[in-house]
Length: 518
Image (cartoon, rainbow, N blue to C red):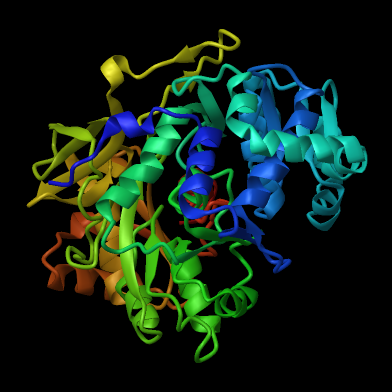
């Protein structure tokens, strides 16, 4: 059992950054991005105080401030700067579409959005930002920086010498909101998840406590996952920086050819990604591009055997983890000596758990967790500003899991079971079966209404020659009944969210729309 001192987590994000600066040194590199101009812990604190004070003059205390930025150093400086002066960054998913972005802004009662002209121009988001600006103020980082005077910079330098005293004036407490994230909406309408300072600090420290023998002070994390996604925020940025390591931020996980080159250039040793992206990087990489990467921390979707083989050629071990936005997000992560393919490793220290039985499911149960990393609560859509906390601190993950010898294995989401002719069928298990037959392709299995059997299973695959009879023979050879075999096959690209997860809502809609043709 790994010991974990929860009392150590009782601090703010900016306070934890100051602790890291003081422990590991002002001159140690903390951040780098595609511009290849690293900044030290000392410069990160200084930049956060200068920018934060300027932004504080344009916003209100405890205000949810929209942040629409890619993974570059500026997003980290903005995060810590807002926190230093008691504001709450609300990270907006710029891949979510205007409708969802508007809904997020309305839910949070946002009055201000921070973004960048360069980013908006390159991302072709002009129309989106113009629409979001109706009734809200758009703060352009270029303008904010342009307004900085010599006095502002001198004051920032003075503030950095007395940073704890400056931060104390914000009267920010560990249990106060630190960030607002919006769930990806892979299976429904996004919710506003409020994570406290203590939640995020705890999760960064929990990962280090569990993986203390794996992570080294000189490790370099490579984080191509967007900060608006909790995996990119905590696992990729905060776990590194708050524990004295360096994080390299990259603005898009979709740049399969560019990312391996930058991994080589930065000598990254730890990489964060999802299975979908990992396959792309491994296939596009040159012979030595990924040689420096000791471990990949994979999450958000199940890691395929083919992906492990691709990375093994580069000498890299994939450690699969598991989490939820509501848990800051990491709940469990594999370790090199407890790395069972198909499992997600042991639960982090400090987390209590229980399994609740689910009717029709005979193996495992629905996982509920409680601990210092479990969210402050959801924003109440009907009461502005109100946060509804989880009952008695317990969060229902909605995942069906088994726990064997302390190792967690995900059997599927409660919502990812179909009821066919009265029998519960795991869609995740069917996906695994299909993947075993056609490992070089991507697949997603969904359930749609069926007038005779309640629901029917549809396979969406990018394999052009996918054949149901071949799949049926394979499934029966694996011991699965014909009931488990998708009734229909739809050949199409797999819809994916900006976070790298499969977009199940879009996949279901695709199957429903084409149902008459199937």
